[in-house]
Image (cartoon, rainbow, N blue to C red; front, side, top):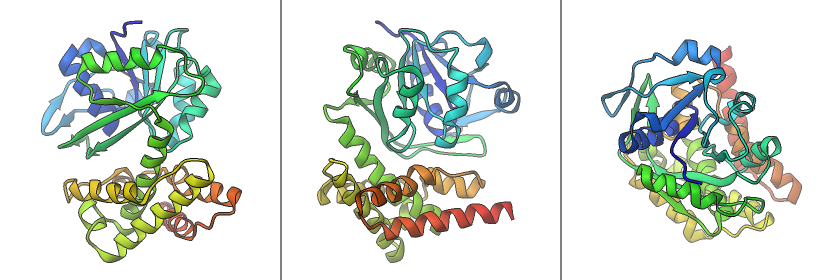
Length: 305
């Protein structure tokens, strides 16, 4: 099936980054952002910018959107349930589905609603996008890594990769996508939570001794939990994740650090929440992640206070 249009749920850093690339290559008609009525009223006419230039990508109400050919979930994990409700009217028998949410649980939740046939496993990695005050800034677009889940129908990954190729969206088809998802989770558990708790950046998390210790310790606990889940993450991969962050713009921030600045609910349950739960299941100790989980929740509670 030749895909000609990408429907995106989520108009934040990830959604804007890859949607704008596709629109620039194929034209604005190739990209459609879908919002529920309340979000549409609040944000549809926001004057957004990408790297200083106005962004003219339009949004539509979910009730007025067309059946999706390629549906991309780019919302925060905290908004996935609501997005799934809105997506029900968008999903047809041939709708290909990609989730770019952080963590390793979103595809299962999507498949429980729509089945596995047209769902692939995917993650975005290597980007340094920051979205604050209506402006997206990035110097590196990274790649969307994707691959077949056990239940993905033949040809679905190829259909999506073909569209990404024509749309200029950087991507890599993985033979072992589950390993890639866990490697990305290891990175996120370390860098996102550490920068959130310390109010840090890519620069500080790779140079400040206390932040470095926290970053690395949290990732090593993910390695241990992943092994119990049947996924082998090496020390070399851990080092590579650290070096990747060291190569980012030093004043850039991952998503949870941006959440702290904007005082938004975080995805902590997808990170330390997942690692601590699986650690208990497999009798693997996760004290660094338990501490990070507690500190993030304390910071979030202070905003409400």
